[in-house]
Image 1: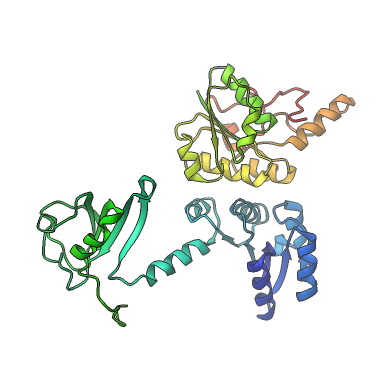
Image 2 (image 1 turned 120 degrees about the vertical axis):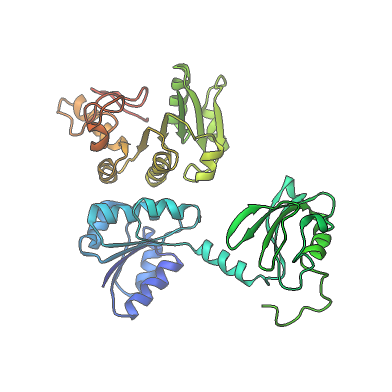
Length: 229
Length: 176
């Protein structure tokens, strides 16, 4: 395969190196001449010290016959333009963009980028998976940090399972407002019977968290059990 | 008429003032607060600090429902991306991106984005001054699909300027 990599940061550098080692033909475009020559010293003459956003340099790199263009600069707007130019101007069959703002994923897909890699989204996903499921998950802060939005994932043994919000002692300054059940969010009514697996979304004052934990998750364990994941 | 300008440089600030004088409701966005010093003290529109390629920033700035959007930052790619968000996400009917690289300007004009290429405009202005014929269509270059359509956006491929943006027929040096 002939791959054009645009952006000689850490990602572009290691990507180029790995691709060469796996026997692919690679050209790396890095617009900073200093960085470009540094990479060339290390991995050989596959580096063009040119701005890959410019059509004529993509052409110079061989975009007309490239199988893949991977845009991995640190700037979303550059990665978008590189992929669009590759796709529409040079008919490159496969374009891959690195995206930093996860919100741009959808837009890039709409605008014709074939594959979108979002490190932010990946790390986010990994962090969320690593949070022990019995914990309260902080979704966000409001009112300058005085209020927080919390998700409680109800596990077997939670004091809230089989009860309704009305039967729980919800601390003052705190509201349970929605439940996500089987991936479907619905407003939480005072008479909704809570089940194992429900994700209860609450908003409340920061200091209510401990009480909320007690009601929805159970008393804080003295020692963290080792097998909670 | 609500107009959004991304990039408060000389052109952005001058355009903001001119459009406001024509009765437009103007929102101008720039990443640096100091850029707004270019606006006249009489400017009554909104000056918002933020990244014009960030959908959330645009939404907070009140871009939704705008009639006209022009991206005039110093970065071609930023302008291209902002313009595509304006057209695709917010459905703004008239969107123009300043793209100084002639190759990219041409490519995006065929991709459905109206572009304004300072390089071409200035080269043409100089050509004309020297008595040679211009090499590019004047003013904002419309994408063919849009130019072919009827209605207020239609017309010739290059004619009908958006007020204050292009000066067809000649001396359109856009930025000193």
